Length: 127
Image (tube, rainbow, N blue to C red):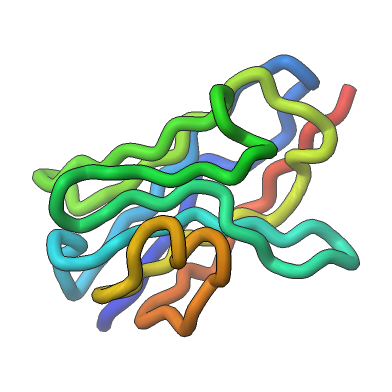
């Protein structure tokens, strides 16, 4: 069964950190660009951070630049999102997704049709 499974969400205080994981099963992530997306209540899904399949180039939304870092571990077939200096406005359900052809900028900015989506993990930033 082909699937993406996110983990690592939870409750964190403002200024705190979390690391999200996106593990693939049934297929390899090597040939895909991978993105992290989030959706807050009442808002549209938005791209947060994306990483290419080839040269490791990345793209970040302005709202998370300098605070979040996306990385991939090919041996573990997993992509991570390290989130630091978190803010209440980071509260959302976070999803990972794959796309075989999009550039990281296009993937994060316009959220084109994806080949795989995970079911999401909830991140709440609150004191």
